[in-house]
Image 1: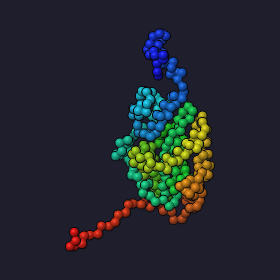
Image 2 (image 1 turned 180 degrees about the vertical axis):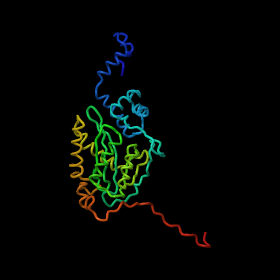
Image 3 (image 1 turned 60 degrees about the vertical axis):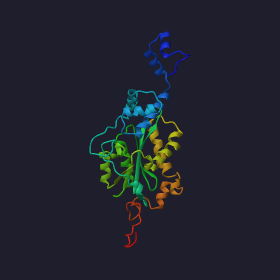
Image 4 (image 1 turned 90 degrees about the vertical axis):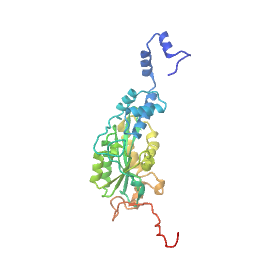
Amino acid sequence: MQSQGGLSILRMCELAPVSRASFYRHWEAKAPREAEMALRDVIQRLAVAHRFYGYRRITVMVQREGYEVGAKKVRRLMKQDNLLAVRRRKFVTTTDSGHDFVVYPNLAEHLILTDVNQLWVADITYLRLLQEFVYLAVVLDAFSRRAVGWALGRSLQTSLPMAALEKAIRTRQPKPGLVHHSDRGSQYASNDYVKRLESIGAVLSMSRAGRPWENGQCESFLKTLKQEEIDARPYHTMEELEQHVGEFIEQTYNRVRLHSALGYVSPEEFESRVGGPGVVPGWLPAALSLRRHNEVPPPVEGQP
């Protein structure tokens, strides 16, 4: 806050006379709602991008973006927006410093996709309402770009991506050999999520730390969703948002929207051309494409 007319805040309070505490309380009560929402927007973005960070680390990152805010306020806002609900629990040893779960290698970058249900990609993002933030978890079929599972919630607990995964399993009925790719967030590495994938014979794959492009298909989908639906209108309630998000995903994105990566057809039309999920006989898991090398011949006697 800047001083007025060359007078400091302290001097103005002395001339009033009011205490500085009373002045700041009055100013904060009259401050624009948009200012706090902008701060919460930054906190949400950082907390979702760094899900294993606590409020202290988030505070430092927020301050680096130019906001003069203390850890107590950041903690209060994170608590209000359900960002403190995710707790690290020790189940197994891991090489990842972010949480205490097993981290799996990135298999997705080596896959050659020829059919549906060979590779699913999953991610979580936040969506902004007028008075709160909510979270969206999605699961896409990487071969057809189709959104096969999604769920909205007010918490970042494992139950959110689990709901999206359960929807994908119900609608697609994948066979053993499916590869599930995500980031290495604690929700996707948690015991419950991993066990559910193992129960259907799925193989886990995770992006490396600090490489969001390794889950580029989900990033592209979420960008499209926000540009073409979320940013197009204001949403007041979660129920209203859920209805429109569902309509966009099921009716527009999956059935109508043309995808350049699919030859400018929709995911539904693309799947129909290859037979559709669970229809193609002789389904096989995706093949691995590894780097080839030329065999070095043994040296010939008498030659250097």
